[in-house]
Image 1 (cartoon, rainbow, N blue to C red):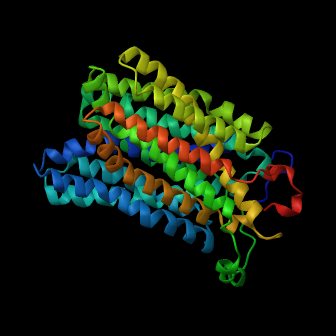
Image 2 (cartoon, rainbow, N blue to C red):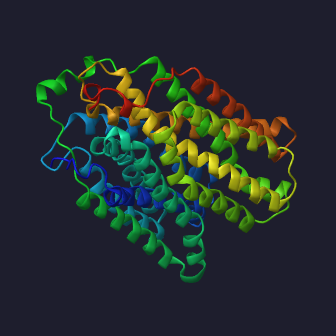
Image 3 (cartoon, rainbow, N blue to C red):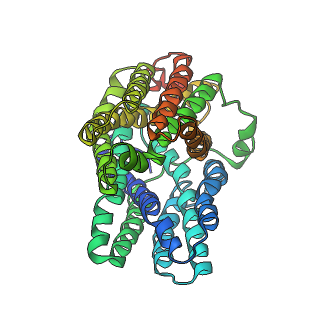
Length: 415
């Protein structure tokens, strides 16, 4: 289906695309909140619980680049990206209900690992879908709207659904599954796909086209460190709230909800800023501010002040997410030879990006734990990991060459 020239950008269509991302993040969040506790009801073995939960990251390392590469290369009559979303999100929702309702350990483990599998199948093809169907001059706007819906999913998972669980218990898991099923189906059936415009012969030549530029490598390095900076804070935040600030677990949940709420509020703002200003300065400001706010975590001793700082930190974390998403596609377009169809590489691009994110998440907890131990058990030390990782991310972004947005370059350079 050709894109109408009179309506090159549709916020409604991008919202439909955002439903699958919201559904996926709901599943991601409720897993973080409930999975370990539910497993502990079936086994006292903490190593076994840790091993099962760790399968999420391991599958992400494998499936994110693999699914992205496959969605670039193989086309069906239903499209390239659609099938990864329309099946994985509903199946993940069903498997979550099966896991939460299981009273047999082996079955629970099978259901949970299968849930992780389908959760990790869709993100990369899904991210590659947006630049396929949106013109480069509207990537910032689309990223802002998509990030808004993604963060809504996080917010639902971290506050309303746990509160609902306190009232209706298992019914909250059915609500979670319903959101996941509906989100995948809405995106799968409501969002068009652009025809790839290539042939099997062109697909065979795909690996021989250079795409991994030095700037993209710096982008991936920066992404690894900004996720390390975030996860260093998120991994031990509840313990910091309870043991350092003398708050409660509910205070920790409220703090992360406030953080997520601020990312929702600023998503559309940063999407517009991306269209008006170069991406690099925006990223440097957001990463630098995020690290500076992390530094304040080493000295605060008040729960209300922590809430305030989390709200401000969420603003700049939201900026990092909104700006980095289209910037990756922009850097890819610059790296490819003139006349190359960039849509053949978006899955590979975001597959590698998600791989670096997974690495950051995997190393964050051990590195932060070591830092806390080295500081005599002070949970405030986790913020030093945030500061150092933010600084390294800032350096990686600073050495990326500055060029105009893809939307300002000649049309023949664009996909």
